[in-house]
Length: 305
Image 1 (cartoon, rainbow, N blue to C red):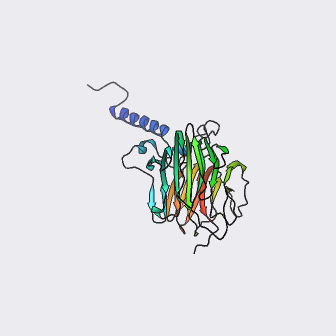
Image 2 (cartoon, one colour):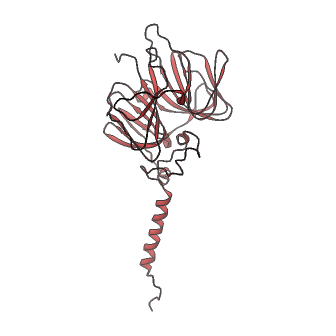
Image 3 (cartoon, rainbow, N blue to C red):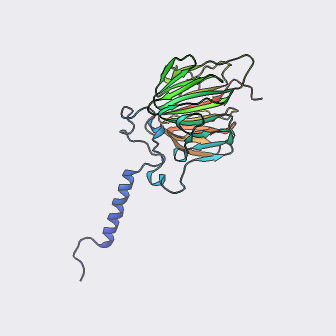
C-alpha cells in the first residue's frame, strides 16, 4: 500500500538539505564577505578590537586541522592570527610575545605582539637598538629615567632612542605592537624620545592617491625609519603598484581587503601582519563596509649602500 502523505521521501530529503544550507549561510562569514552593519558599529566595540578578535576565517575552517592563511615566501610573508605562537618575552615580566617578523625571514627589524598581563613590566632591547611601541588594546604606563609617567591608551605610541632606560608597566592587561631595529648611526645625528597618538598627527598630502596618511615619527634625517597610519574607505585602493628598495612591516588595525604581494593575492583583515622585502610588487584594495586602517613600518633616510 502506498503512503497517503503529500510528500515523498525524496521531497523531504531535498527540503532538509535546503534548510541546512540556509542555516550554514546565515551563520558563517566568507573570506571576502563584509561585516554586517551591526558588527561594524564602532560605538559597540573598542577601537582596534578585531586585532585581538579576528573574524575573517570561516568558523568551520578555523578548527580544521592544518588550516592557516599564513604564507611565507622569499620576498614576503602573511602571518595570520591562527598561526601566532606566544611565549614569555625575554626580560619582560608577566608578558607573552609573538614574533611576527624577524631577521630569520630576511628583515632587518623585528615586529612582535606583546600581551601584558596583570602586574607586568617591559624589558629593555639590546644595546644600540631603537624601539617603537603602539597600544592596540588596554592601557599601560610609560616611564623613563626622569621618573615622569605617561598613560598610554589605545592608539597612542612611544618611540625610544637606542640605549635609553625606560619601562612600560601594566596593572591589568594590554596588547602592544612593537618594532625594534639596530639603529643606523649617521654622523652626529641623534634621535629623541617621542610620545604621541594617532589623532594628534596631521593628515598629509598624498598626490595621486586617495588614502589618508599620517606619519607618527619626524621625517628628519636622524630617524632611520618611520611608522605610517594609512586609512582607506571601502572601495579605495592604491594607485601606484609599488616596487621599491624599502622594507615594510604591516599590521592591519581595522577593515578587510585584498593585498597583492608579488604574484599572489591575499584576502586580509584586522589582526593580519605582513612583511614586504625590498622590491616585492605590492598593492592594496579595501573591501567591506568599514574603513581599512593599517600601521606600516618603513625604513627611510639612509643610503641603501
